[in-house]
Amino acid sequence: AEHRRTYIESGGARGHVVDLRDINGHGFTTTLLLKTAGRLSGEAHVTPLIYGDLGGEVVIVGSRGGAPKHPAWVHNIRAAKDIDFQIATEAFRGPWREPEGAERGKVWDFMVELFPPFRDYQAATDRQIPLIMLTARERLDGL
Image: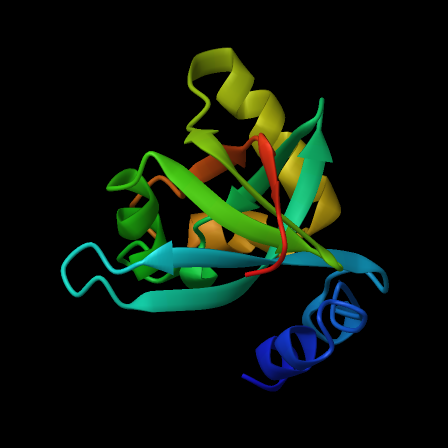
């Protein structure tokens, strides 16, 4: 909650890069803010998430720490055509997709390299952890 507050209140000047060594991550881990609308409530939600840039697409992981159910934001994304997100001080809107097959394996390996605990989270659950790829199609003034 504090990370999200810092990121939002600073307009992205702080909170983009975090030190996650204390949870077996890396010292310089990039995070974004994901804005979704509740698929049932319509209420806006802003969630900070680790991300990677792979071939010009932004990758986020629906790990929820290995919990048995997907995070709510995954369901909200799947109910939307376009998604708003902010990387540091820049906000975007664009389409999303979920990689499949061999591509999914490559994307998963890439994200585990960025944040090794994702591997442990997958081992802790029977569900396949979703990978979501975002494309920045349109610049926004902010979230």
